[in-house]
Image: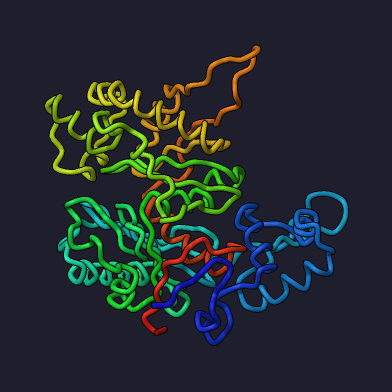
Length: 397
């Protein structure tokens, strides 16, 4: 197993053409372009505080390696139009996987943050060897469908539901994923899939995806509430994931007393069942979801005290600018929740403590799979410091 610590990316992770990673200063430029979409050299100089000639020295090698491209300038007034630089999505891609209790979801994400292909299937076999055979077939399918060069694959990010037990990449998932529990997932999955693999829990990777492709483009400090069969989340501080001593920062379900309702989507499925509408699993429920169904009203009434407590605790302890509602949560339901959450915030001398805005995620699709795909790309090209310590490469011993 190879362990990557903060601020490092070993030379053996480079391909022969040197395109697989970027220097710290190059990451600064690429991160800005990821958030901005495109920018001229003058824009980059202004945003970074670097001299124009320094920007030129940074971007020219990135263009030569195919990581950036120069868009055709468009005249918009008097004078010579500025050439815009942008990330070249064709130069690299990553695979993101979300392993859930009822399914496995896959996303192919290119360097520019575009989802090129997706797959979602029920897990045919929860044993890791069988699941990996299914996952390899899914990966082969999306690479072919997206017409991608397999040699430009940076790696595979995997989000698994569960919490870390404080021993490497060993997670403690729900009972339905027993074979994935308390085992070294990083090395096992890297060996089975034959690629570099990053492992994290689903709430963390969803928050990381939001940081790169969603609200994080304008908000550097936020908490992310992850709704799925369970309930959890992640924390982004100064644009980077705050993982905590054991990798479990953002386990917001643990804030709630044992006898309080957990505001998860499995409870919502059971609420539908009480109203005479039966869904075999979350995938079926979300595919036929109606935000104004009476079952949703019942779930909201039961869940709001728990959500109010969690959001109030987050506001008081983390003081984020934003609390994002995401995961597998339908947008319409996220909007209803955002409108109704109430934070504990008494007045003093005519003032209330500044609190976070609450809003649904800006990422549509499988948030954990999309977020998992951003992890290898961020580690290679965007983060000034890699916030992940669990990555395995089957070719590096």
